[in-house]
Image 1: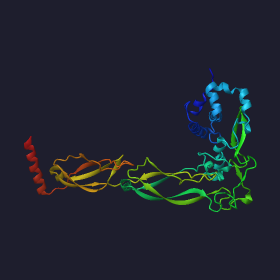
Image 2: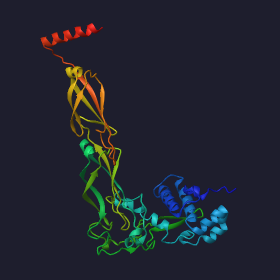
Image 3: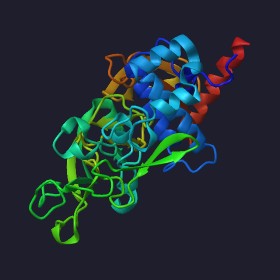
Image 4: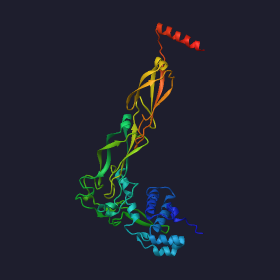
Amino acid sequence: KDSKKDLYEVLGVKKGASAKEIKAAYYKLAKTYHPDTNKSKEANDKFIEIQNAYEILSDDNKRAQYDQYGHAAFDPNARAQGFQGRGGFGGFSGFDIFEQMFRGFGRAGGMGGFGNMGNMGGHYDAYTNHSYGMLGRDIKTTMTIDFMDVVRGTKKELKYHHMVFCHDCDGMGTTNKSTPGKCPKCNGTGQEFIQHGGFGMARPCSQCHGEGFYIPNDKRCKKCHGKRLIRQLDTVEVPIPKGVDSMVQLRLAGKGDAPVVGKGPFGDLYISVNILPHPVFKREKNDVHVNVTLPLTTAILGGKVTIPTVDGDFEMDLPAGIQPEEKKILRARGLYIMDTNVRGDEWIHFKVEIPRHLTKKQKELLKSFQEEEDKKH
């Protein structure tokens, strides 16, 4: 039996997986184990294993051979004949999927922390072909809202900083707003290819740092210094849905950072919500809890009391004999379950106020009351 790992298992997909599923699995794993971002000892070997699996399963002919013959279809002699691509990649050209992925890795350090280490890169044509562009970095931030904003839903303005294309050079990085020239070292691919253990491996170009282009110092935009991006303060309107809670992240698509490579789409803005406590209402999931203090006479005799609710005051008729810590429920008077018209309940917790100071007449009446109570027993 073949002792080598099953290539489908390497990528974590089923044997009948579609090309799209295989590609997505490869992107995810390669991003996790790429040696430029994962410094663990096993990452390099794992990355090569993933790369080799994808090289076979992404090619229809090779995949068919593998499905029929397993690893025997790619014995050392056969593999040697097949490694005709640049830098040792069988069938991998200068514009293949691998080169599109990791072009942006070398840029992060030069962007002062604004580089996109997590998203997919693009090759040199990213400047003229939007579909090859790198995806911008997502941004996470926090905003504080009032409890009543959760009740009604609202819109709030948020000021935040993000990276945008430089206005002076239109995001080109050059003084004349023209497309930068290809890096002469990597010919615009952003990659250097090396051999490792019989397999080809890519790393960011040492001259252009994975960008694929090179701008001489005298041709760099004076505002962004050839970085293409500048930090900008913007204001966005954030819709606050009814029933939102602090566990939810609100997402504004396309409001994150511009991509460090190419002219692809901006990342997203994720907003965590901090909800200020309310002096009257306490939240428990979508239920609301409120304490109501009753005079002793009302607790004993019953009567009308005003109950605060998130919709305004509500007048309730209480029966006689309300006990301390007794609870009553107002159905569907709580908070909305987010993105629905379903509401939680309001729980009323009754407290009974015992007077500390009594008049002579009150004491006499209470003694008479006590005598009547004693007669019951």
